[in-house]
Length: 98
Image (cartoon, rainbow, N blue to C red; front, top):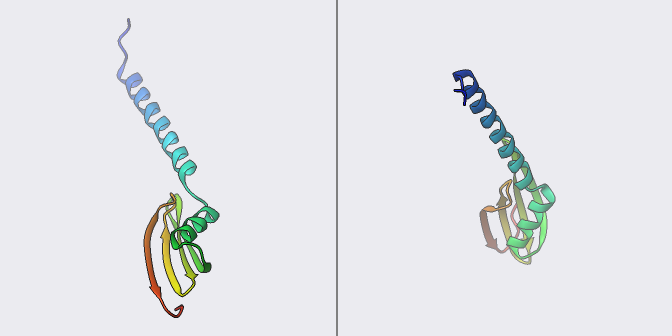
């Protein structure tokens, strides 16, 4: 069995790192949610209602979604991460504020 040269070992290491980066990038794209999915997640968190305002902000490779939802006399400010988890949720009862 021949000994591997330093160049070959470095090449194998670089190739493995590149393959890992491609797999990680593919996972990010596969796991992120789109605006329709994020909207439904926010509505589910509020128990239904009407989306009265929404905002999308870009955070690197994915988006962050913010929704204002009114459900009866309760309003909600809900933030959904690019991967579909509710990261922040505030609610209040009474008149809708905007």
